[in-house]
Image 1: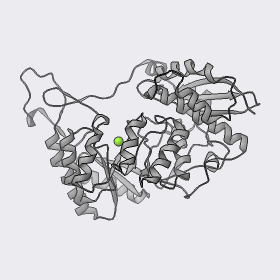
Image 2: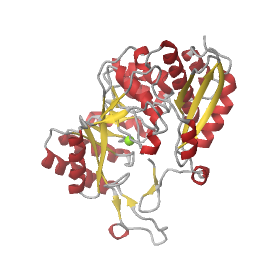
Image 3: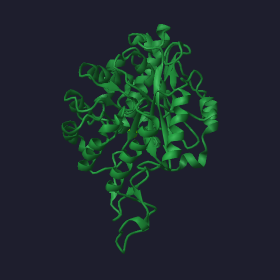
Length: 404
Ligand SMILES: [Mg+2]
């Protein structure tokens, strides 16, 4: 039996937004690591880990489920994004320890691999249609089985310049204005162009980033139906998910949702009423391997697949946790791609290998990934990591904020 002796935090990336939990035990050299990164609240997560650590120090590291339940109710209120992240970091570290004790990779402990590697979807983008087409072709040639297609930046396709829209005389200056009707015009036209050029062979997705008003979101799903998307991602904001019922009544466009979810009351009705087709919780925001395995199992019985979220701010340890789940869940669908800079990969010996549009785990015991703490410290820029980071704000012509 390994007893937990300490819970430490490691911050890295040049901007300090990556946070890792390191759980140490009384067995020589036996420790585990987990991801607790939050791009916008890294320092808050560190404080939360320090607050929760005394609850688990001294406990048997093998009691993963019991520790999960214990941390879950430890603050009375639950299901918030910070505590979920801490809980996930501890959970991943305990699975890492269990695997090291057993001498087996985590995916073996979870039932064993049911596929040979993890297919990923790439992020293609272009400021105009030919540039987007070129980017998609590049990813397809590289081996990606699925490609996400975006017009320019986050929310792209829906932006108008000052000369294209009517703004109030007293409006504050803003670079661009988000407009639902422009989006409804441009995104279906984008897919008409892509299907004309690429045919229906390539599996294509699109991410709405929750920008549309709900009734327009229903309309977009319907307008995209002829283009047979692999899935349409984040059509509605978390506050408006009940509109998925209307989407289902109107069209057969495949729906992927969940990267902002932190609460079982968000994902459970969408799964049990079969209102979405792919669940996209981020493993570290969904409570870690233990809880996301439960989400995946619930999905399996309702015919829904997994597409765990990644995105540019995510880290290699969370990616590895997702890969272990991807390897064992029969109802895995697709994994969002994420890649890192060479100096970032260097910090994580054993990281998953992204090659030809697929992620490959290794067969080392535990998660199979470690952290070089000296290199992690070197990479962190003291000035950048002292700053706060905030989600970019998109606004409508009259200055109203658009919720991501
Ligand atoms: Mg998304």
